[in-house]
Length: 198
Image (cartoon, rainbow, N blue to C red; front, side, top):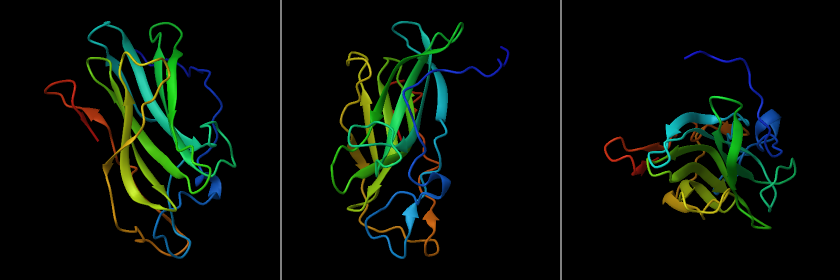
């Protein structure tokens, strides 16, 4: 194997998440003294190449978060973060996006954010995306969504809460973004290549 030069891949429009560039971060239930959760920036998280055992094709999967509207499109005034996943193909020639989808909250008021996502794909070609989630009426918690290999292209199923909380996360100083979730990871169990862990 060799390392290539930089390769640009066209994507749908993105922007920075709410907290990037001094924007403030993700609000959360029980926050005091101007605290928010750190949603970092728009970097791609946990990129990995997986081989689909059914088709034999290898693809690169990754995800990132950015500020979105009620429709899940990028906007610097969306008032929530969404998490977009990507399936990238043609890895031995000119890489292109095969499909992508966005996990987001479409609520007009009091929206929740999904941030610091990671994706994994089973040997059967099913995908899971795990992310932190919070909002003015939601304590920091963990959610997962995904897609079956037979779902329509670009589709993301509705999220499911995988770990709830009933506690505010006010650990650092006033008016400081709280570090939360940036070491999380979604992975497939190596024993069966079909069970997901986050």
